[in-house]
Image (cartoon, rainbow, N blue to C red):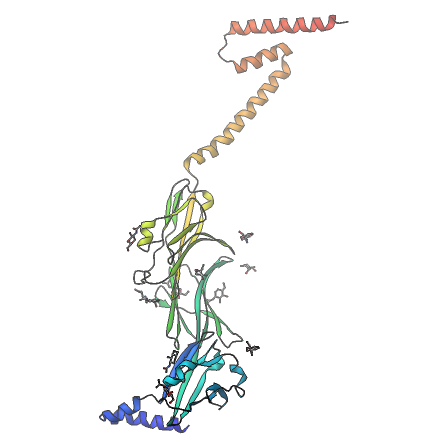
Length: 407
Ligand SMILES: *[C@@H]1O[C@H](CO)[C@@H](O)[C@H](O)[C@H]1NC(C)=O
Ligand SMILES: *[C@@H]1O[C@H](CO)[C@@H](O)[C@H](O)[C@H]1NC(C)=O
Ligand SMILES: *[C@@H]1O[C@H](CO)[C@@H](O)[C@H](O)[C@H]1NC(C)=O
Ligand SMILES: *[C@@H]1O[C@H](CO)[C@@H](O)[C@H](O)[C@H]1NC(C)=O
Ligand SMILES: *[C@@H]1O[C@H](CO)[C@@H](O)[C@H](O)[C@H]1NC(C)=O
Ligand SMILES: *[C@@H]1O[C@H](CO)[C@@H](O)[C@H](O)[C@H]1NC(C)=O
Ligand SMILES: *[C@@H]1O[C@H](CO)[C@@H](O)[C@H](O)[C@H]1NC(C)=O
Ligand SMILES: *[C@@H]1O[C@H](CO)[C@@H](O)[C@H](O)[C@H]1NC(C)=O
Ligand SMILES: *[C@@H]1O[C@H](CO)[C@@H](O)[C@H](O)[C@H]1NC(C)=O
Ligand SMILES: *[C@@H]1O[C@H](CO)[C@@H](O)[C@H](O)[C@H]1NC(C)=O
Ligand SMILES: *[C@@H]1O[C@H](CO)[C@@H](O)[C@H](O)[C@H]1NC(C)=O
């Protein structure tokens, strides 16, 4: 309380005192130091002192709970606040160099607060104040979903403190619906959703954690629909915005097909290994284009069943770009002709069969056989035909006679 009063007194006076350089160098000498740590990571709270004999180190927090005690050349942790059990240590090898810094492992949000370092030696005393702040920012994710004829985008993030989320549709601010949970760790888990309306062709969601000074941007754009004929080739385009520089960071590109509820990955590229993986042989990347950050994918021998939405996802730790490309594949002309020809051919065959049946029904056996042969031998002359007919009748007559003559 008193410290705050003194500080605000200085702040009010500061502008009028700016003429005194000595005064300012005194103010800027750090009486306290701010350290920003990240949830689940480790942190070092700095504390240095002038070396001397008989070193005694005590670290306490605001509520004067003991966090660490060191004297007579060893640790004394019997009175340690149990929240810090097994998570703290000094750098013993550094103590004689005047280093009393405290290491805290696997930070929790509850570790936030003021820490005070007291060091005494035979030659003097030192007190240092360290303000620890803990933040969390787990790489956000942008999801594109289609449900029940409505398309929407969701940006989700786990963050502490509460992040700011702003949406833009075609560069104008739009309103979102937000769902928030507070996890047991104290972290916020936020889902922010916008509906995709027909007229907007791009959306952007920007998320910022002010404590960690980390920002993340998710962009979504839809390309003009593509119309192609069956068995043609197509290039599905995917390029990051020109002002986003990818070469100096790790990123991952995935191409997938958007289906309701399911999206199957067709191909992906990892910048760290420059590795490309393709799950469908009709797809191919252009290696030279990849070198220029162009992740367009070529699809060969289009099929009608290839029609649908394709999603390209370029993601790094602070950027996601989703590009949607709709493909419509028309059946080719050849197929079209077959569609007309096939029923006609079936009709012709049916008529022929009916005619043949009618003829067979009305004509004696030998003539049926002749006509049958004739139907399959249209070049035979009438005379040949008659000869054939006679020969066939004769053969049949003889066969029947010989059967009759059997005992
Ligand atoms: C103390 O030593 C540790 C370990 O070497 C080092 O990381 C830290 O910066 C040192 N702190 C000071 C205040 O010298
Ligand atoms: C620090 O002080 C101790 C005790 O006086 C001495 O043994 C040690 O050499 C000193 N270390 C340095 C780096 O001066
Ligand atoms: C601290 O570590 C010791 C030894 O590794 C272990 O027996 C003990 O259960 C740990 N305590 C906590 C609170 O994790
Ligand atoms: C895009 O890729 C990132 C990283 O691989 C992943 O976390 C995210 O879920 C993907 N987004 C979509 C919409 O597929
Ligand atoms: C889809 O929309 C129809 C009417 O628009 C509604 O009856 C149905 O419950 C919706 N289904 C889901 C899963 O939202
Ligand atoms: C998005 O559309 C759904 C109905 O499809 C509606 O319930 C919801 O409020 C809309 N969200 C926004 C942010 O307009
Ligand atoms: C984009 O969508 C928002 C709300 O859905 C609407 O207010 C805005 O006018 C749309 N912008 C354009 C350019 O269509
Ligand atoms: C890229 O440019 C667009 C508009 O030209 C802008 O809105 C966006 O903030 C820029 N992104 C970065 C990372 O500079
Ligand atoms: C999603 O894909 C899996 C595996 O490819 C499949 O078993 C499942 O039936 C699919 N679900 C839907 C709704 O298409
Ligand atoms: C890709 O670019 C790098 C330098 O930017 C170059 O050395 C390499 O030869 C290029 N590879 C291809 C396949 O063009
Ligand atoms: C993302 O991080 C990289 C370094 O990791 C940086 O060069 C780049 O400017 C950042 N981009 C944005 C949009 O913040």
